[in-house]
Length: 128
Image 1 (cartoon, rainbow, N blue to C red):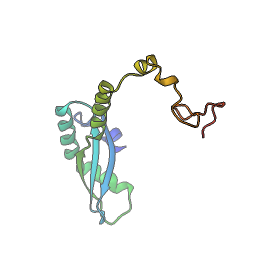
Image 2: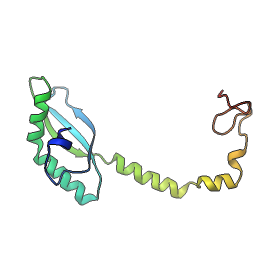
Image 3: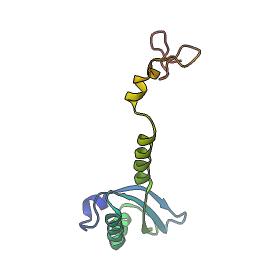
Image 4: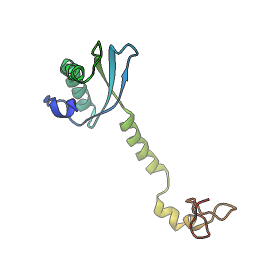
């Protein structure tokens, strides 16, 4: 919440914290963030977060009761960007739903027990 509400740096925007890896001794934490935008926007955002690390560490220290406040480092999480790219590739490679329905594949019973492709039974729609 401190990144969204308290940080006023214009470089830091469109940021989502995806996960935080905390060291076993609680002295350091790696904050994985996803940033919407191009490579330039992502680098600027990470630079802004690194500049604000002390401020954010103080905010974390105010909220947790431990002997040490973890030293924060920020890493760009490319998982979201990769999943969007993978979805785009799959959309290009796989046939569309309209093409599948035109071929009649969606109406066929595929299993020996009479269940349809979506898992519903042929006798009243009960799942088996």
